[in-house]
Amino acid sequence: MENTNYTELGKKYWETPLKFKKPPILAYAGQVGGNPNWNFPSHKHDDLSEIIYICEGEGTFIINNKSYTAKEGDILIYNAGIIHEEYSNPTNPLVTFFCGISNTVIDQLKELCIIPYELEPIIRKNEYSNSIKSFFAQIFEESSLKADGYEIICQGLLTSSIALIHRVLRLQNITSETEESNSIAHRIKEFIDKNYKKNIKLEDIAEALFINKYYLSHVFKEQMKISPINYLINRRMGEAKNLLVSTELKIGEIARIMGYDNPNYFTLLFKKMTGETPKQFKENHKKNLFYHKNP
Picture (cartoon, rainbow, N blue to C red):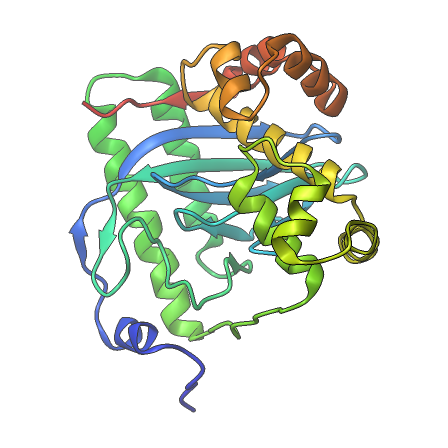
């Protein structure tokens, strides 16, 4: 039975065989290894997409304001520009492989999209899960060793992984229902997501949205289980983590980008929120992250 719950762009995707207009290029490959307290606050990637494979354990993933629980064999996909946050289950810690992907252009999809935006960003364990896991393990190994020709091998493995993902989607023909929430809490969250780098206060949010600041704070905390200011800080810390492991920017530069004129205050706040200084986080995280810089 035909599912009509997709846009015209999504319909063309289903009707068109998979074709790469530009092949995927591996930006980085990494691994999360069983830390019960591991988490990555709200952030996004504008210049690449990302695929996560769950090897073991269980975690909570909040993608575009929607929460998903993923476990062994599941695959999560973040198209470029999609805000997401990740949390390991303390009693069943996550073990994952993940890949950052640049350059990709797939026929009928927007640039840097792995799947249509209309689809759910999670693919449950299926008959191809073990094959994709094997591809990701090889990508991680090749990226770690950097032997002669590893870039070509990684590109082939990545292309094969995406091809299998699309095969699964076409077999299942699963589409997601587009949900738009006009709630006050989501309007507040959207405003913070757009302005988190600016020096905004609760009064600024209230003024911009024409809402009493006390009511604003109450409604947001009731629905989001976090205060607006703490969400703003988490948002900044999530993006700061991303910059620490994906760029060579100095800590002071990252602090200023995140809206903190005082690098020392940024460092104290970062440690309070994450348990590590920015320097410690950068060193510890990069142990399991291997970047391939494109020429």
